[in-house]
Length: 449
Ligand SMILES: Cc1ncc(COP(=O)(O)O)c(C=O)c1O
Image (cartoon, helix red, strand yellow):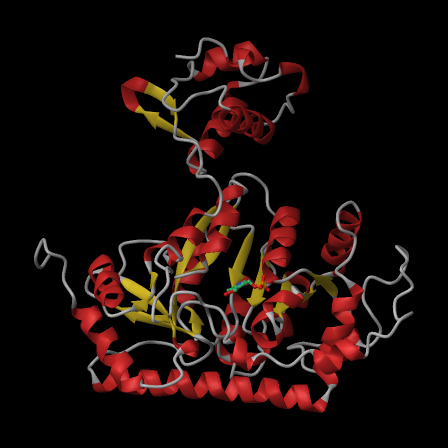
């Protein structure tokens, strides 16, 4: 039992609100000054100790309980829970099985052979191309026009960042506060869930069907007063669902006018077969739209573009000046060249068609094996299985790597799945489908459940 909270937090530096107290206590838990299992004094005593009202303390305890840092446990009172995991735990778990396989379909990465050749673009970077100054425009000439040409809604205001994850990190850090709720897709992208958890933000999962977030569930989740929604408009990872324009409109109608920001992560970008789509077409003042160039042009370009309400973009630019300032203009210049050069555009079109054809052939072969999957776009396939571990083991024994489905889930109970990077299957579709179907039927040694 901790006798006094003032012994573990600095009373003088305490922001005297429930959020301030929640933050201070969570820092004390993070620093180890409050060990897992410690029992906290009753709310009235804490209030007296810190000179706060009991309702401030009680709200802080509720925020911490929602974020999983405290548990109120009947007779035992309020107890400190285990410290949050050491960062990207879901991300690591999703890739845990990616040791050397004959065919590693666990990774979600693009096929290096389908990425465009950079040499012509690099050759344009002659000496003197960059002024070497800190004061240049953070976006290189030509990029805005190239982006606006196929952005899903009219805008010419973009922030360029170091990839979609960097965008999500910056936008989430700016918009979200400890204890906030955010609607996410079920299943969703594990690093996003890790990011939200690291910020102490609760995620509320909403199922995805063939057209995107399920409207009825989305409407119920909105009633829980989320601060934001994070969705993938195209080639959703892991399901491969691309949101239809009709669904985008329905979702925009439901969320429009509420104090909720829609954050769209178009990570597949130009390798998605579907046309660009965004709720921003109807609610631009509530939409942040992010497009990554990792899958289409190369992960090591480390570039993504984002559009959004002017005040959000201004805040991101201001904050960025205190950090790295801008994304390398050399890399941006390479990207502009890649976006406009006809040969590169043809290479990216070929990559898009190749991914679509690989996915289609694997899905058709799976159908012939009696296994149905959802979605029809991008690099990944969400394979329903009887038992996740048994399926992973069955595949591993045949030299095939797959990603465990559990880290992608945002609510339970759910049918077990594996994520299969279909975009990396180049040939032998019938054989791969046969192995996947066998794995999908595999049962653990404990017998049928
Ligand atoms: C849904 C999703 N978001 C973000 C990313 C990361 O993109 P970037 O390389 O632009 O950071 C990925 C990469 O696989 C992804 O699948």
